[in-house]
Length: 504
Image (cartoon, rainbow, N blue to C red; front, side):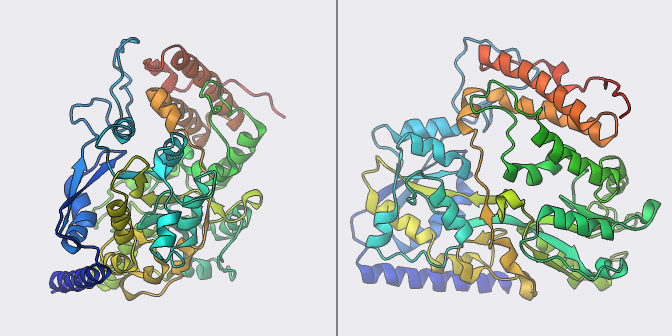
């Protein structure tokens, strides 16, 4: 019945869209071809189901052509990198990534009219003058942007130096800080989380919530409800808004062995040491028996929040459905206790008040500056970002639609949904161009991950780990400078023995 209802709703929506298009006189008997390409490869079937089928139904004179940019035999995948055990000829021509292929196509005869890209790739295309501004079309067609979530609209405008809008997205994802109200009550903590808290305020609250001994210990906070306490991934939500770079803008010199990095990571490590936040060692038991409902860890042993081990954590919007569904069926799930929860905005630093890093824009749509089919290209973007589209897709998408009117609590529940979109995206450190030029640049991150894991297990100090990361990272960067396609020595991914640090 639900499928039938959704289908009927879709037909009603499409009928309304079609009627509106007809009233505008937008449909003609002449068939047009609208060409679309993606910067990261595309699942054509999924993309057509999500975006083009409704559009073609409402505009029967426009045929959508998807231009492939991903070579199925490309051993470099989406990122264009080499595997670590692969011998690489420094003189060999590197196969192009989907982004590079798309950019080439955009400047050739019969180019794509619409390009689908990631937010982090916008600067690369704008620097190459490949995107057409949308402001004129928005004004000309009286396209209403007032209901688009500010975090979406402001971020997209902020991506360009001239402040114009060059792309739109119909959906996005973000995190919020979710908390278990009963765990606050059990710990005797009257103060509940609120919007716009600082990280220090959340950490201070988390310390009050960290109670119990041994297997009964409750943690106050975790960066993820399903992490393994990996310090590298834990730190990113905390360090990214501080604009702490791993290496310089040329990708030639490491920049991690600094007081700023040390202070930030010492904060995280101390929380783990004090058992306010889980570390990798005390997360091992979480994974044992994960998914097996009769295990001592309970039916949600893999999830710290749902199993009641963590009072507060960062949670993606799409993950809420699991909690909502579990609460609905709590009486039939052995070992699960219904959770009384709510969400507030992700904490921020005083130096970057309100700015968060974990916001993700899905399938940005832009118009190729060289397109000769501007009218149909705008029509497609307008359609895919319309209020009608948002109304329809809000019932089926795992992301939030960009139109605030249709960002509603899931499944009829009542929680502070605004926390997911009344936020501000911290400026991105765009390494897209560097990653194109040096496909194995990702290895520097892996070196850091290995070094910082030694801190989490108590084998190294933060300073020792950062010094090691800086030294080994510089070795890798030097090799990539000499040969951008170089294979990185696997031994660099292995952490070195710690050097004794004198007491005091």
